[in-house]
Image (cartoon, rainbow, N blue to C red; front, side):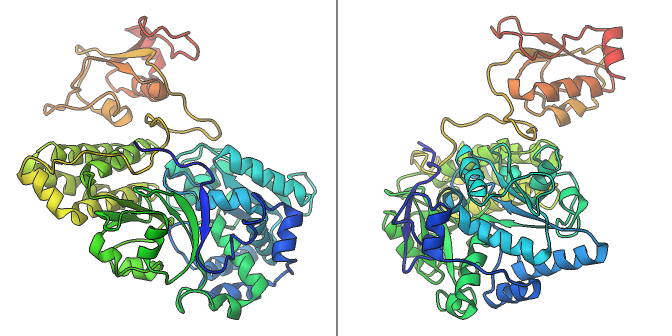
Length: 537
């Protein structure tokens, strides 16, 4: 049930390897082996590098698919206009439970990624390179690769290079989150739309792209655009790294040329001959049905045309024996838990959407379906990052793709199939973690505090439900529906904030004597009256 993928699953290749060259020889290509397999790499001028990227139609491989040559030129122009050195950032933050392709590249071919990043740094005149990661294995591999090249963060070095380790969170992978963490803040979006190309790390123009993107650039710089374009489709040349999991007998990361039938990739991983559906692009992606699988090929344009998405390169089939709505509900709950907790449409809307899907499964009828559609619509384009948009797209795709099952649950007694838990989540599940810090995972565990509502003071402002939705909901009368509740350990900081910001000073927190905790890092015990008022200033 929902088994976690290892950091480095089985790796396969269809056709001739490019990114995965040498994987059949060693587990990890150190610098010496990397040079034996790929050969040396000469520096390339800025405009020449931009032209190369344009000639091979290189787009970001992290999900958004932005043309790399446009990003490169934008950073160069901004740096020249402002007279400052730009920064280069490799985004290796792969935090979806179903994605491992970048993790595989960092663990097994870190120097290919560094080749691309150093090409860009040299072309732009950058003096700072940061590689963002979230896993212990990727941190170790990349730090070892930097050491093998003699690169460090030493002051006065021609190029200062370092690894930035952040918590494993869905929102950590957002460009704005990574930039903010590099600058010393928490690894969450800053709450405003910014362009890293214009103002990124330290306010400098920053070229930030996905790990696979830099590796693809390094391949193209070595073999040239003509040879690179001999592989794959005319309009999307080269290869693609995919993570295939779900209802398969052999979860794997596979490198395939664009244009390979999606059906062949599924067969390679041991998927059911006729899957009930295939989730394409990961948990911010879209479902396609079995009939559509037969017409789709591996490419961004092909998957878009059939209603799917290449996204982060995750492909997840499910069998005919499982309830697709129940499978999607588990993902929807995880997506809700991954909210950074700072945008109302996200940290309130996504849990409401998950509850709406659960209501549908439990026979809530047409009203539940309509409520889910309204909530999903309401969260889009209203967050500080793409997390609510991607989550809403996933939910809308679920409703659209499985119409027969939806009708069975909405109009009948359900589809009668169990939930097998074939879509991978993190091992053991994970409780919501609130707002993450810049470098440490928020604590989870038994409740140590209780929060109380003083009804003689409460005036129904509702701010408590905005700040602490894990505990408080508002009733039809606009007042909290609970008088007292345990505070989840991960939400203690938010509980204290709710107490401090309550306009009526109607909240207090007390130690839960039955929690059996050690008292470490306890929130202060607040008394009523003047003590609470002083804290609330």
